[in-house]
Length: 167
Length: 167
Image 1 (cartoon, helix red, strand yellow):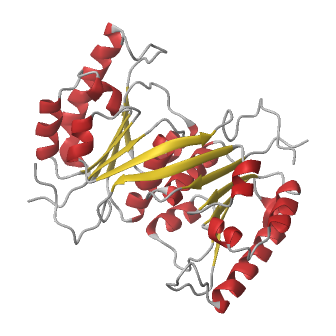
Image 2 (cartoon, one colour; image 1 turned 120 degrees about the vertical axis):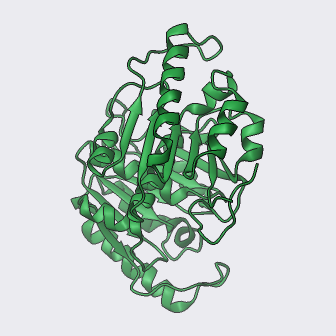
Image 3 (cartoon, helix red, strand yellow; image 1 turned 135 degrees about the vertical axis):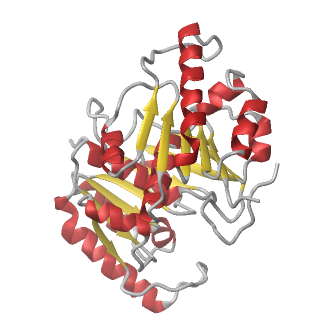
């Protein structure tokens, strides 16, 4: 019997990863150890550097690229599998494991339902799974599912190339 | 013409404030100065201590309390007004101003539409407004509106009094 949670952050709105980062900060505030696994990404962003400074361990793809989610290129499938092996290898080191954009790898069955559930049963860490199109079975086993809906959306806060607001 | 954004994070789902915290971390990654104004709250949480360490300036109520949002007690109205004055006083110090839970103060007209718009027109900072029930006029002037929907929700990740997951 483990005191563990699975949180799924899905939906077409912006802010799934930033929401996860907020929870990371909250966990760090309670002195938890955090592993941040970034599927389909290979760059350290500004916020990642801060997370690293705060002691978060970040794992990601060696080389990401743009792709059509309907047809994931083979090299990215391999990257998914390699990153998943890192999840399995390091799972016992963390109190919170963030699996950023894993929902796509799950819905494409690059990581199977069976493998994921086996992993989830064998870790003591809380889990956060982000990404559009979370599979239904994941929502079922999750404790919390948040859907971020895009009600209105420009190119996003901080986009310096966009013209500003005029009332 | 200012290169500024207004982002509204609303909805009945959990994660509005954590989503804002994620954006704060992203902004800090770009070396932005951040002011975090917490309406209806008076405690520094674990994550706030980390934000403070990272240089975020936090402002909040002197004394918060539970209340019925339909009937906001007078002392909290005064706290709102006092915190709003701090927003106005400090607005030029920040690149990003997070107005956590302000949506309630706006929909209850403790801070009027006119006052808010006047402020927004006169700051260079990006603004994030969080809280349920954002007023319609705020969504209209916002660049981005994210609604966090509660699809499924237990007592929340990290709630240690809850029993764990059993597959």
